Length: 549
Image 1: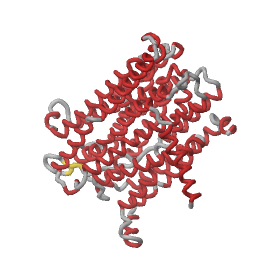
Image 2: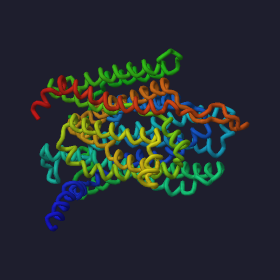
Image 3: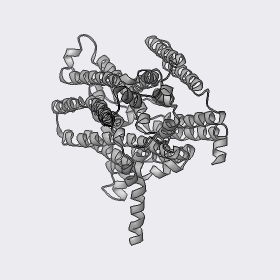
Image 4: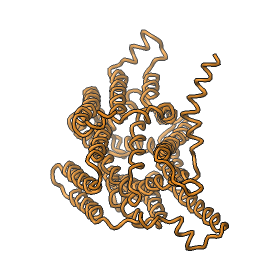
């Protein structure tokens, strides 16, 4: 028994206590910005029910809107380079992002509290779209600065000014990226707890009482941008403390500035390829978005992908051939894993209408998902550090494919059979809880080793630029995921019941007859896309690195 407890103690020390020992105050500012991103999900469930109950938007349109909401994330290229060029003014970018997020929240708050006041200038649906697009622009600005701050937060010299060994720096980057994910997931955990509390008894409330809860949640959401601003203020406080410490040791103002500012060798020059490419992408996306050309979203995606790939090629021009192949191969595998489609809004509508999942139960699912994701990140910490990207993605793809089966089983009435032949408590909610518990720890695992590898290999003078170009490529995968989701929703039509709010007449009847085929199509693509990409990458770009391992 003592040997068993000793093994547990060793595991806890390696995976949790060691992480706590490596925590530094310099890690807190970027973690606060990441925490704000995690807490941003506070309004997610409200948005789902608001769209379902008050807006006549189709699943295809919402998937298309999701594509546009992801496009600002590819703007991390020019934004990242601007962060490097104006590093001393990065706090102002955080403030700008906070202002855009606040504007998005205020629009939604006004739509809920005074919907008629917005219908004169623009329709409610148009204001909803504007709010949906403003928020990601704010978050991408803040996230770009935070990514660069994570690189800066890891020291390269010890307290005596001696260089830290590369192995320790790599471990520190892994720790920083893990803590960043912990901050994001911790934010979603807080959000889930708050939603479970706010949505208690919501199923028995009338529409007016539910709207009052929605308004309360959006008012609390106004604290989200304040969290990121606090992170920047704390960073300024840490710098001030360091300045006073150096001043107490007799350093003059000029020497303090020299010691705390970037080294002369780390001051970047303007990279017109990055700025020009970013500007080209922006103009291309906006121009195509304003036109009514057929397949304009597809053209935007492939055009953006070509621009990002070209900029990545230019940025890594000085890398060795083997390092470039490893970089491209790793990015390709992660790209494929994140590009897998989803069923879209239709499956959530079906769960609400057919399975009776209300706001509080969906909040409980989010709570379980966030809590177990946070726990899983500690459990799989060593696994992530000791396995290659292809091994991690292969295992995750297989597991996630299998975990698609419970949702499919629910659609075909498996919960009715279990209640009749096994146990009455094994109903739809029980199966959904178990499925969420098994699936939730897996989503963030693949990103941590990728982010740590990017941070460790980022050139000192191009922290934000390198991080943002790589992140832009990976985030384009999410845009492809939304495109695939839109295509699937065009082929397999899923609609929920939509009523005219004035007359109560049903304008669109509910139709979930094609949802089962949609579930199977998503499961097949979710397995085939990553596995085929891994097969190709291991025989081409990653051939040498895999052979060495």
